[in-house]
Amino acid sequence: MATETMSMPASTTTTTTSSKRKHSLISKAPKPPLPSPIIATTSIETYLAQIKSSPKGSPFEKSIWSKICQIPPGSFSTYGLLASHLHSSPRAVGNALRKNPFAPGVPCHRILATGNTLGGFKGKVARRDGSEAEGNLTLIEKRTLLKKEGVRFDDKGRALGTPFMGFK
Image 1 (tube, rainbow, N blue to C red):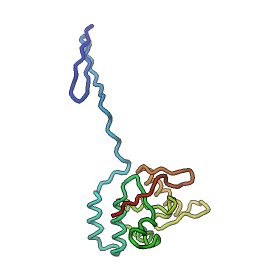
Image 2 (cartoon, rainbow, N blue to C red; image 1 turned 180 degrees about the vertical axis):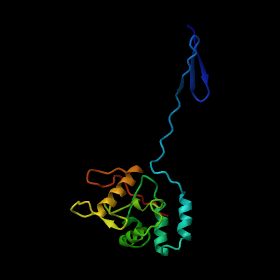
Image 3 (tube, one colour; image 1 turned 30 degrees about the vertical axis):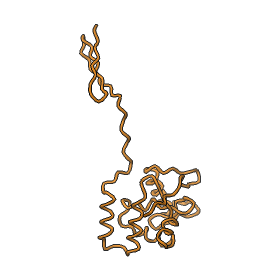
Image 4 (cartoon, rainbow, N blue to C red; image 1 turned 90 degrees about the vertical axis):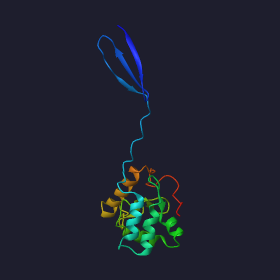
C-alpha cells in the first residue's frame, strides 16, 4: 500500500492512502488565545463619548467614570489611588462609582479598597457577619467580574498584584 504526504499551506499536512483515499488534516499552527470571558461590545471611546454627552452625572462624577476607563481588563486600582490622582477623597470616589449608569462597560468593579480588598459595589457594603445580605451578594458579583477578567485573589479575599496607577 503506497502512502504519500503532501504539504498544504498554513502548516497543514494531508496524508493520502492510495487504497482507501483517507484524508486527515493535522494543524501544527498554534491555537489563538481564547477570547476574554467578558467581551466588550462597545468600545471605550464610545463609552467616553457617552459619558461626555450624558445628562447624568456631575462634572466630578464624569471625570471619575472617564478615569476608570483607563484601567485595563485584568487590572484594578483603589479608591485611594484614584482619589489622590483627582485631589479628592476615597469616599467621594465611591459615591461617584455608586452612581455609574454605564456599568459594567465603564468598569467601576475594577476599583478596590486599600489593601486590595473588595470594598463596596453598587453602593452596598458586605456585613461583617457574612450573612447573605444584599451587600454580600453584590460583592460576590464584583469578585466574579474581576475573576473573569483574570484578577486573582488570595485566601483572605485580597486581589493579588499591584494596583494600576497610570491615570492620565
